[in-house]
Amino acid sequence: MSDFATQMASTTGLTEAQQKKVGQPSGGDMDEEHKNFCTTITKLFESGAIDVTRPETFLNQEVYDRLEPEWKIKTDMAMLNIATLLNHVYGFYKSKQTPDACPQLASMIDQLWEMKQRIETHADVFKF
Image (cartoon, rainbow, N blue to C red; front, side):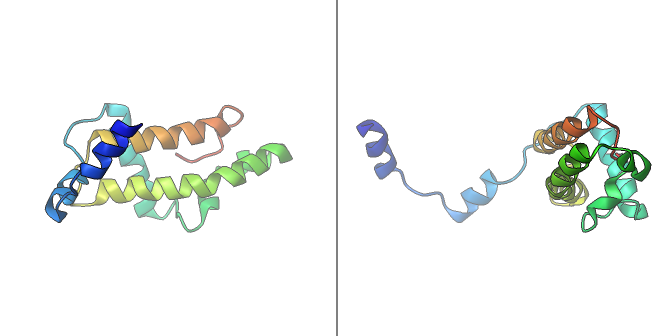
């Protein structure tokens, strides 16, 4: 433990320019499934079909209405987290300051898919 404490005490901070460089997304690529997902959600956002300030717009309402109460509650609880991550994915993808395809964006999409799939193993409740 003392080695760690000694090393941390002797470490110099990063300059502001170094911090900015470290915080930038790295270049790279994503597979077609990830790229297609970005295209799909972009169309949904820009057409007004989904709105992160109204997570209920994410739902296939007919499917949601048929859910058992337990699954409605689980879906409702997940939607706020899904809305936040969906907004991040869309913002990252549309930003001119970030690459359209990179490992960081793919990771966010994977995380979103994992949340979504926890619900959709029971019913295909989301539009995307």
